[in-house]
Structure formats: structure tokens, C-alpha cells
Length: 196
Image 1 (cartoon, rainbow, N blue to C red):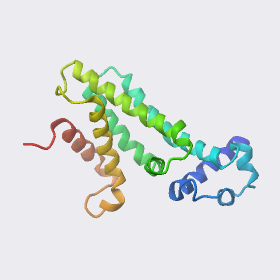
Image 2: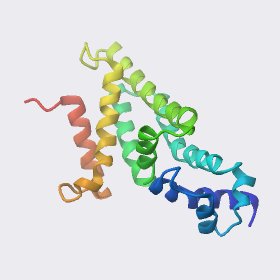
Image 3: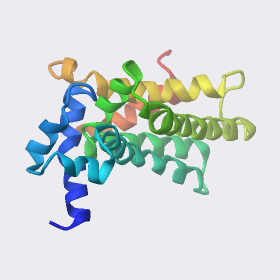
């Protein structure tokens, strides 16, 4: 197996293990066993378990860079929020372990939190703040709302929806076929609230 293939294979196979058991719950031997390689390969490619975990987190949180690309679009701030919502729903569909890494790192941060997770999350929140500030300056949004609180409320609404999926499967259809309806509901709640 080529070096790049072995390295990528280790990341791929370690991802569900770390997502399910957390950083401390997975041993180097377990990862090596699943990958069918010698334990020393993890040190060779990553410098140890923490390096492999960092590589997994880098791959998982790299998908958030797409939010910064939305900021570069020449479109209405509300449309940028919609692109963010669409992108977030798609991210969770394509990266089923991402939310586990979010919650794991937020509740039991590893050394990777400060260097990988926190900057990625802050980047998203800052970008959403910019969308809202831009909308305020063009009188698109209601005055008096704090851009940071607004950004966190929107991000929280979407993230919490997916976080609760295991507990709410009997209450709501979480299938991808319903994504357009979900996006429409999130945007409606975000823009119009719930008051009549």
C-alpha cells in the first residue's frame, strides 16, 4: 500500500472509532488492528494517537471552510443565510460523524480543541455575524438584534435539530427526502419567528 493510501486509510478507519468512543476510549492497538497495520505505522504517519486524532478532526472540520466561500458570494445577506442552512444540512448528511466530534470536543475538549475545533467554529460564527451585520447595514433585518446572538441562534437551531435526531426519530421524519421542507421551515422560523 502506498504511503498516502495507508495514511488516508488510517484516518478513514479511525474516524468512526473516535466518533463513537472519543479520543480516550480508543487505543492505538485497536486502530492498528482495524486497519490491519503495525502499531508503529500510527507513529510513523502521525507521531502517535493524538496526531491521528488531529488529522481526523482536521478532515472533519475542513468542511466548515465552505461557509467562508458563501461570504464571497455577491448576493443578498438573507440568501447567504439560506446557503448556510443548505450547506449545514448537506454537511451533516455527507459527514455523519461531524456532530459527534462537535459534542465530544465541546464537552470533553482534547488538546486539539484549541487548535482545530475552536478556530473552525469561531470562523463560522464570525462569518454569520458578517452576514447579519451586512443585512443590518442594508436595513434587511430588524434593528436591535445582536449579530453574535443571532448567529449563534441560527447555528444552534440547525445543529440541535441534528443532535436530537436519535431521540426524535419517532416524532419527525429525519430522512434526506425531507431536507427541502426542513430548510424552508428553518428559514421561515429564522426570518418570521413564530408569532402570528
